[in-house]
Length: 369
Length: 80
Ligand code: SF4
Ligand code: SF4
Image 1: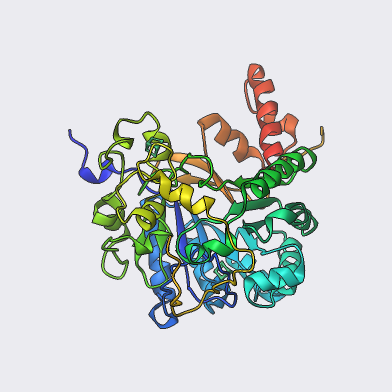
Image 2: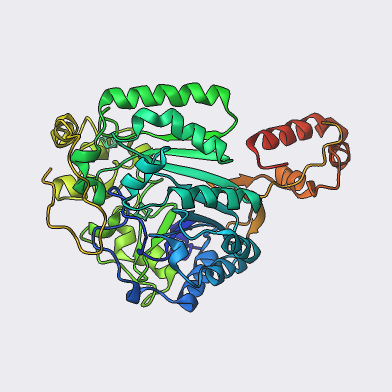
């Protein structure tokens, strides 16, 4: 008997639910697309509940409830309840603004499992400067409320030239706030991060110093430290999240479905949960099949022994830098376009360069790589 | 450690996945697919049984493996 074709694609494990692109903060490296989704276009409570049911039936067991700032959704408690009801483990990914005591209790009651809190710097004024708004105090209170409620707390920091040199303070802060896990992720340069590349790009010395401090702390703390290296200095591309259309689904605030949260700008016809079942989107949509597996690859990836390990690198970065998403990631030393990345990382960054803060309208000043 | 009564920590969720016909242990940044024996052990971690009582549910020769497994999962922070 032949398998029905729908079984040819292994089911997804995880979902990133971007509940809203609205956010009180304005981080210059925000991972949201530069064209933010307007609040009026957002999926409503019932639509999100249906998305979680469909996702669970498809095999999703883990969801990040993210944004923007998911706490801006007044129906967040209902959404958490719907995810929980579908049997999905939920982690709230938040800036902490608006996570006061009562809200935490309601979310726990609804079945929230875990919280990941972002912090911009260990020093309050510097954190507020990077975030583009006063918010450090709210984060501190949020951390305390989460720990008090007995939920596991993860602290997430996006690293760049303005905070890398104080990485020990950031680790100490996470420990003091009661985090079980501290994720130290170096900025990626697409979307808002690319607009601010000159202001954010660290030096190689900054990175290696920070890395050795992380290694040192690993020996003296039981807190899990996750160090996400950048891919622009060593000629080694980062694997595309376990492969395109292999592990995870991203759902945008307006119901568009993406194989990766950075894929908004790719020339793909993005399917929408308002028009299609999630199972059809995962298995049959052109967007999810575009770079699935390894058959789409050209040289040098096609005959490279590493192709099942890194999947040719990041499609989104490749498109942003070369204009062709199907090429080898320029971060790879074997790519004929590798000079694009070395040129980016070699160009002196400009310390005084002002941030282009995240805004609803795309700013006019686009950095030309 | 002898009076430890293992229970799943707040950050961990044990569930059966009907799509994959598998027992899963889900934590904030990870999903662990448990084999049958591991799932059985974790299933017994209800905060009431002691380690000795959990071990007693398995054949004598498996005893060491069970305690080792419990210690490992404890070290990961998934049991408390
Ligand atoms: S990165 Fe900053 S601006 Fe973007 S969603 Fe997160 S907190 Fe808001
Ligand atoms: S050539 Fe392609 S598959 Fe090989 S290491 Fe580079 S990006 Fe990875």
